[in-house]
Length: 243
Image 1 (cartoon, rainbow, N blue to C red):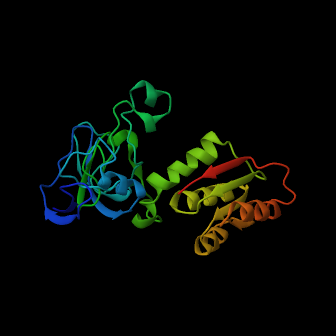
Image 2 (cartoon, one colour; image 1 turned 60 degrees about the vertical axis):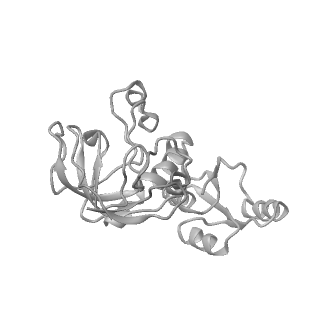
């Protein structure tokens, strides 16, 4: 298969022919139909992640079609349209049993602990625990955005923040994670303040549900405009700093 490979940290990637992956007993192989580019990919390329061993194929935001299935996989079969979280838990360690798969003691991370989705195919472990079947109504490009930026924001806004309708949420930074947080908070019915130095990002944030919004080019400007944006609010339930 073809894959984007880097053989040295901080050096250009090249398109190479590499061996096709095969599934572990508890895993599958996916044909990659869409993959995203995340700041974490840059950190890996820079050499900031000790799990990466060279040569390496990055990529952890993905969606695709199951093409091969391990002998112990029961819930998925060839042809299934799926996506997955960027941290795949084993499902049986104390962390996973407590519901915290993202800090699994034996976690699998495509693009970090193993080769990732900047390739035609990728092998995924712990398939029954982590794969999410996609309805035909969700495009692969949309699904690829869910497993990293959206799940990160969902945990912050919903699981940790316990945000509810009518509460105020301030989102600092309107990149992938920030815009996802805005969409999630808006869907819940919260009142969202989007804060960023980029007018283009703020315009998109407003389209996605940030009703009052503020530009933060200086601390004094932020304080003044945030006070105006939050007029009538007794308290801001959560402040989320995002990328």
